[in-house]
Length: 359
Image 1 (cartoon, rainbow, N blue to C red):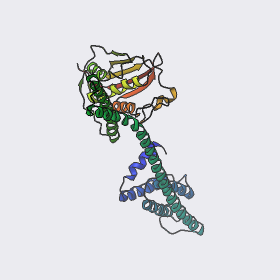
Image 2 (image 1 turned 90 degrees about the horizontal axis):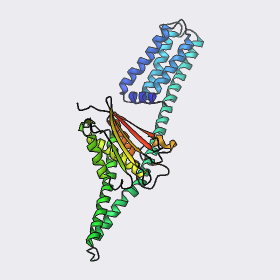
Image 3 (image 1 turned 60 degrees about the vertical axis):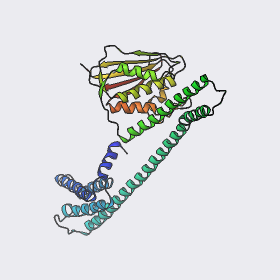
Image 4 (image 1 turned 45 degrees about the vertical axis):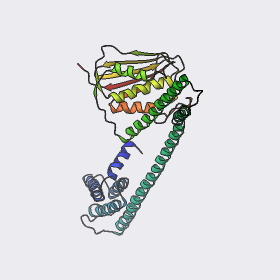
């Protein structure tokens, strides 16, 4: 079923029952008038076929009672306007009586069957959606079982050691445990933020609150929070000093940059460099995050922005939400994000967002 047809069904399904009777009658009358205008080219059998097709169309969108009403109305219209003698409900000969009876039965059966087929398709679609939801639910649980359990276990273990008053625990050990708690807390907070952000995207509650942003300051701030993840990945920030202030949602852009840099650090080998560039092209803000790693497999490039999707050969960990959030936050700015391959074979993420410039 095509997207246009699904949209039409969604619109008509919201129409009240009384309005469905009105629209059904309007469709039958419109097609009847059209057939009358083409009367010199259509036989009564041809008109019957057109009315049956119209009835099938009505049955695709409306409830059963408007469909049965349309079947009766189309039979009466065919009899009154197209079967001799015209403009009365009397049927002239036995053959026409049989044809009218058969038309009425076929119209009823066709309408009811089309309606039932639509209901069956709806049930199958609901089952498919439930199956998809269950699959995503399992994927999320599997991811969270590691991503949430690991930092929680770290926090609990370090806290227990600090509270045990172990005399053998020196000041250096205490500082190390406090560092572990801090790192695990940040990791746990980031995963919760990803889940909350995805929930906001799904509910449609994301409305950018735009204000003037210094992109250089934003990127440097994000880099400072990713010190641990970037300890084996040189980060180059190539943003012109004269880049003007841009009107964007600072919080959403911060999350976008964070997820892109973290994604590059996670999916590249030690020593691979990451480059963040920004520029203004006409009325668009263009952000590029590039690495010189191995890049994404060609057959998986189109899936990286899907919810919960993780590369087939990816290391354990990660919920597969980072890039889908990047896409959602970018589109909330009416922008686009694309994944390409760099000249060295690495991944290149390019964001293009319409943005007002500070003059």
